Image 1 (cartoon, one colour):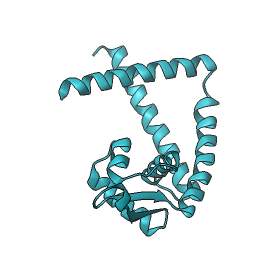
Image 2: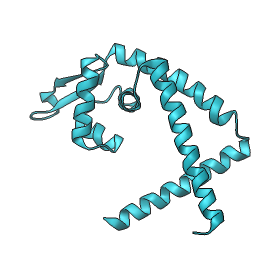
Image 3: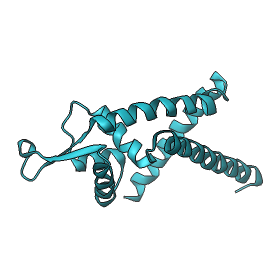
Length: 152
């Protein structure tokens, strides 16, 4: 890797870490939700009218089943989500839903999170910069997907 490439990579990593830390801290302090709580609630809110089984949630989040199980236990104890037996979905099926408390917490969190992203990212970059950021991000995602497929 050339010096210029190394510097660009270092800047990219530093930006990601700083942005992640800032947004994560804002989320935790502003809503008392962890990033994991927020991720689960975002999927459940999006699937609000759809029966959601834990394995579907794990796939959508890209998480291992054990990680999701531990996260759901924590969230259920805080009454952010509920799980119920759902025989209408299959033998031994469980359905996960967001509770009213979880929905309210997510609504408050998304408003603050969106405002933080607007301030930190959108307010800092020009329209051209945002377009370029989107283009580069999509290109990198395709590269990650392609390299992941070749490893399988």
